[in-house]
Image 1 (tube, rainbow, N blue to C red):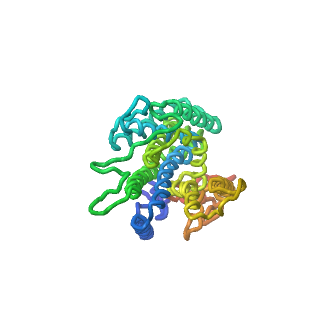
Image 2: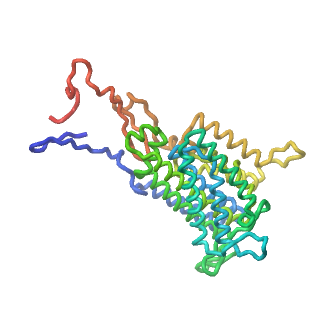
Image 3: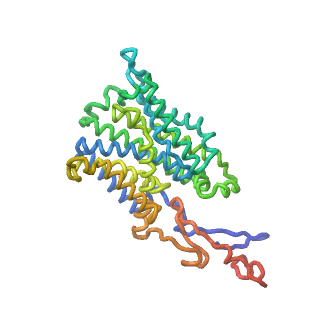
Length: 417
């Protein structure tokens, strides 16, 4: 901080160090290099991957969208939620009702045959509307009690999904709509600009666009005033309220936005799977997403993507490469069992040794990565530099700057002269 004098008055002018300035989007050469490597990897995968690999990656990208939804509510805002599967199911069956084929008989589930431009955003809107109706009651609670309420949503939804036969098809399930653009449908091979694309490649492009838009939205929201209010509510609700943050509006906004993204993810999942039974939207699915945000990294966009890859793609990769020996009898270890053991172990390891998840470990180990400092150590006594949302923040121990006995205020400081 630099003190200057002007005629008739004194003014303090603060100059931020260069490293404390907000980073520009893709402003450094290293970021452009990483972007080029990522684009090249995507092009190679898109050109050379088989249909089996597209199946694995497409499911992983859909799971990443849902993980972003949960991270927005639990990671950034600190609200425990086990009801993500319920909102994904709402989005899936909204897509089925609006985009499915009209019933051919009295026992067939309903469908209106609307295009993807209607049923995909409507799936998110319906889930958000239900979240807005449930939120005012649920968000009066917090912590363990809020988790119990969202857990109840899963069981209520499972009952409704099993018995609303005209929408869900009942316990046996139903077919779901396929996105169609103009004269071609994504469930068959089509030619775009003279290039023949398989169904998996077309779905990959659609899901990747939705994931990029969702990630960009969550990233920009986290760096905005609303995002800072969310983190304040997560870290200390009383302190946030004292600073003027409207706790209900912040929690409600996070709940509605999370429900919207979960509904979109559910619609994409059922569209790609083509056939889903109500039992899929279970508590086990919600717990998998909780594991994904813990393993990948809480309150981080890249952490959501990495966590989805660990939890949802890893068991399919193990099955694809047949990494497990074939089980003989009833004592063998299946890929599902290995998956449960693996991410259960990873949750314990990361909670104990690296709460920042995989993305926190990567950032800590990279050259020039952030290193935690204690108050009273570092370049200047009584100050520590930490990273919050990509920006450098100086935390100052005010006790070391208070005047001692017999001292006058400002006698030892560097003020205006």
